[in-house]
Image (cartoon, rainbow, N blue to C red; front, side, top):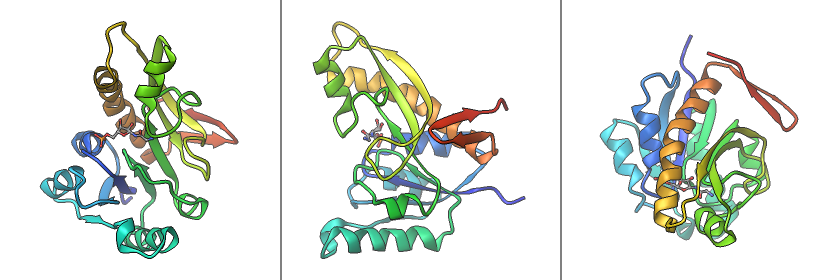
Length: 199
Ligand code: GAR
């Protein structure tokens, strides 16, 4: 049977993309990496791995709707089975995220600290434990059913960079695990409850 086809959307350095590219048993094929900016460092990681890479800039389109339609056309062209948001910092419409199963990696234990500054928000709030969440994406920001989480302690001398760095170490383990489980058909979703069957 053909491997599930995966599209990864990025905006930044792409360290989570790299973890997916490096995973020996992902069980799926990354067929496209797309970014909302040509400056995303992760695009070079895709090229180095021989994966087609593209960017679709909001600034090159008259409005958000046409930008998203252009991105959606590029994604649709490669017929994905799964879309992974790996540090993709633009909000996608309900139409986009319901077209394909879409998952996101987020640097906090949702529903705490949704949004673009989760490690800073966690530090400022003074929580003693934060972490990483991998969740299905729905039409609300950082809201869809949670697939897996890992806790990361907040240390007394943490800065945003040190906390985010330790969270990212866990992201790089958890995201490939979840993608592999989805590719293997081991993930079941019933309403908001998601379970992962053992490998
Ligand atoms: C990751 O830490 C990811 O959790 C976060 O952006 C970073 C991207 O890093 N995403 C969000 O904050 C989404 N709300 P990367 O480009 O090195 O993978």
